[in-house]
Structures are given as C-alpha cells and as structure tokens.
Image (cartoon, rainbow, N blue to C red; front, side):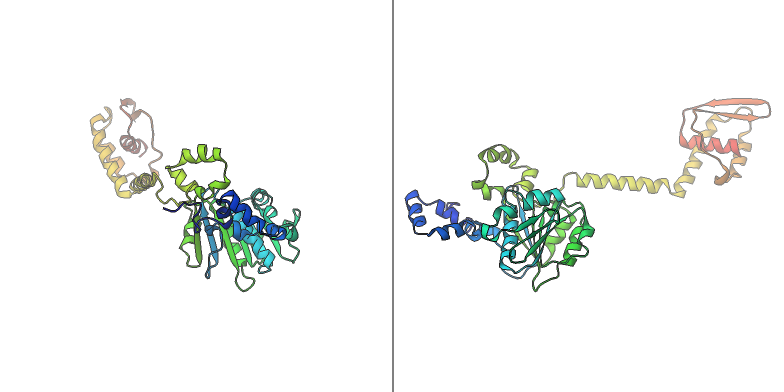
Length: 353
C-alpha cells in the first residue's frame, strides 16, 4: 500500500517536496531563482490537494462537503482570489452566516482572502462599504445570510457561500441564485460542514452541482497535534464524528420513527375527540351509568324525558364537581360519586333542562 504522504492523488506538490530527504530538498530549492520561490509561495496549485482544486467540466455549483479543519475556507478564498486576479469575474458575492462570520472568517481570517492574496495583487479592503477591490477592477461584495433582501437587487458573476448548512434563512440562497446571471459562465462555490437540511439535500440532487468531500484527517499536517489527539479522537466513531470529522450527510436521525408514531397517536386522539358519533355514544353510556345513582325525590323517568328534549346548544357548560344536587319542590338530595366526564355531562343535562 502506498504511503499517503507520497501519494500524488491526495497530496500537493509541496507536500511531496517536503517528504523528500533534506539533501534532495535543498538541491531542488537551490535550482529555483528567488522570484520563482516567491511566486511558488503563493501558487495555490502547488500547495492544494486534489480535492481543493476546482473540478473539471460544466457545473454551476461546486459543493465542498468537508469536516472541521479540512481546509475548506482556504479553498474558497483561493478560488475567489483566482477569479479576481484572472479577471474572469468582476463582481463576486461573499455570503456568510452572519456579518461577523463574513468579516472574521472569509475576509480577515487566518485562511481568508486578505491572508492568501500576494503583495503584488493585494485588494483594497473597505469595511464601511463592505467590499474588496482588486487593482484590476474586480470587486467582491460582502453579504450576510440573515438579510436575504440585500441580495434582491445586486447581480454577480461569481459567489462564495460559507457554511450554507447553518443558514437560518434559506431564501437568501434563492435570491443569490437569481442574481447570479452576469458573464458567460457564472458559478458559485459552497464550503460547509454538512447537515441534513432541505437546502443541502436539494443542492446535492441537482445535476448542475459537483461535490467534493474531505475529512479532517486530509489536512492533519496543518493541524495541531493536541487537536487531533484530544478532540478528533474523542469523537471518532460517533454520529457527531461522522458529520463533523468525515463530512458525512446524516440521514438516519435518531428518534424520528418514535416521534412520528407519537404524532400519529395525537392526531388520532384529536379526530376521535371531535367525532360526533363518539360524542353521542359517550352520552348514552353516561346515562346508563347514572341509573345506579338516581335522585330520591325525583322520578328518573321524568329526568330522562327532560334530557331527551334538551338540545346540545342549551345544555350549558359541563360541571366538574365531585357531587351534584338534584331538586324538585322542597326536597333536595345530594349524589356523591367519583367524577367522570360522561356521568357529569348527563347529570348537567338533567339539571339544566
């Protein structure tokens, strides 16, 4: 089995160069002029893994579904930088979950745009106007996913969306796609740790979407050893680890079947409670139960006759007392019994009719 450090399909050219013995590495670097070394430092195609480079073919959305620390932010920033420096995109949208995420992660972060741009093509960052302007005229505008209406008017020919799975307002994505209409081939890159949301599932199902996956282990050379030892190892083999480390889209939500069964039972109970047939059946049963405790001073036959002539609209509210008083003339008798809704309903009808 090949060593993953030396595998050209999963590592960058710089990684393979670093894997050489020190003497061979010095010989290679000695043959390179200083200008070439400076350009190589900012040449993303030399540092990137194969999953961090734009896929070939015709696509509209490039979805990077990766684990924590897999390098997806650096990939999105380098993709935007490449479009701006080449002039293939003139108006680019940068959309994050909140304004703070756009500023602190996508622009000013350790792997953000300001960190990856070379000195000879450094953009002018204007926080008050929420934009980045490159020397060749390309502009990147900053947007928050919490303000979907801010994307109703602007048009773009490129876009970078970060952490799409955690957006609180999916209509922001709809407004962005409707404005992604400039140029001959407008495209969008999405960098996110996946969640089983409706938006992510629909995006994966589209024919114009290409998907790239990477786990946290793919970028272990650039991560702290303590992070790998304490955090990653603690969640390895768990559901949270499958999502946050390996970038899996979890469809098997625990407890979903039990919740559905409980919801069906509640719906059946509501239907049964509003059924007129069930209601009248309860009245007849309560009348049969009440014959065992009829009043001493009143004829039950007369009470039943009065109850039969009473309508539900004039019956009055149901009494929830434990005892009910029956009166006719000057004689009063109190029936003490355990309260039940059916018996109480019949007793109330007899009293009020």
